[in-house]
Length: 187
View 1 (cartoon, rainbow, N blue to C red):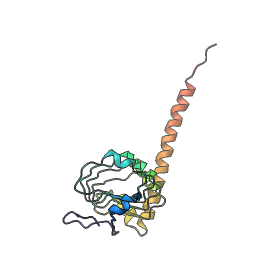
View 2 (cartoon, rainbow, N blue to C red; view 1 turned 90 degrees about the vertical axis):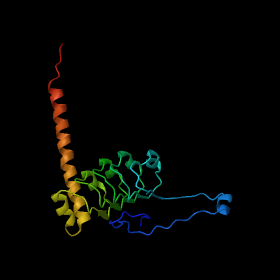
View 3 (tube, rainbow, N blue to C red; view 1 turned 45 degrees about the horizontal axis):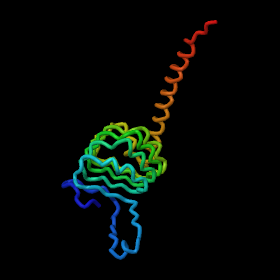
């Protein structure tokens, strides 16, 4: 749970996180620290670009802040399995979030999300997605509120991603065809 949950909003983190601080003896003995989890709280509005270089992270807790956007660089966190962005002011997610294929839990509760990127459908390891408290479209809400909501939402997003990608390829194909047909050869 977050140390400072916003008043009137329940914390969406399900896990109790324990923190261990190395003693002077351990540091003196040369023990290396390893921290696969990172929690950043305190009503922050921007994330340091240095966070996106912490590729060893498996859990990232950015809940209970004032973030309005998440940059595309989040895709660099390729080992991430747990991401909590609940209780922020996020209006949209980058398509690159679909590159976090190891993600098992994605908490987006209590933000300002109206739509989700179809690339979320590529998160085939995702077991839980939290979307409560967002002004999402009725279509997404209907799919998500159904039984097995996470699985159905992933299928829906992946199906729509495939349609969108196919249309893009066809448009590109037409562009290439029109260029090829307009080539003239002079002898």
